[in-house]
Image 1 (tube, one colour):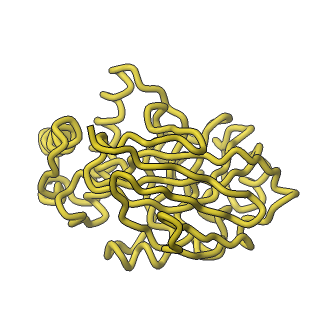
Image 2 (cartoon, rainbow, N blue to C red):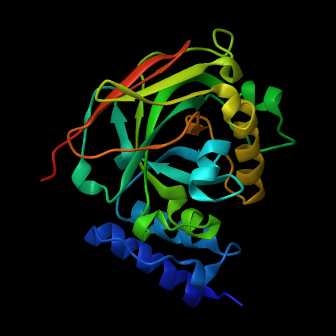
Length: 261
């Protein structure tokens, strides 16, 4: 049975990889699925104790295309921190990343807590203040992206950085399930998808997260940013790449990956 010693060992393996910028072996041998969120919580608590602030959550593995890419069969979630957040058009610190990939997502910003379920699409929609286009840079500390569900959950759902677009839309102005996305790298189209590719509807993903987070005793709160999950396949990127994603109804969001330093 997995105990706290194994949780701490797995957490330190991942934290050391992030700190030293050297990928590590998977942690599924230590914790399995059952304790993966405990590993995530351990390292997030350490980062907050060191001065980081929470800004929201990210949902991962919502797209069937992404699940096929990684061989994982269910969604997961991680925690967003303020040192992950960047503005539209920013140069991103590539030196902080190990093996980055980028994806385009619908981002929700909440205006109300989501503490008392049951949660469905209508219930979570009422808590959404506005919607934006976003880029998420996913980054695994696990060598070669050799991940199972346990590995990515423990590794904070493979979170790296994120960028929010500047255009804010209310749900009355855009229907998340009906949006279309095109993501380009250096002017070349690399990924496409629709809102329906995110669990059928990004609001369905938000309802899943609200239910899961509340069940774990850490519900979504007003002001949280929620990255609802990729709308298409994730794309590897490297220093010098310029990335642009357009999501119908939500506009365009851009970022450049800075040269290594």
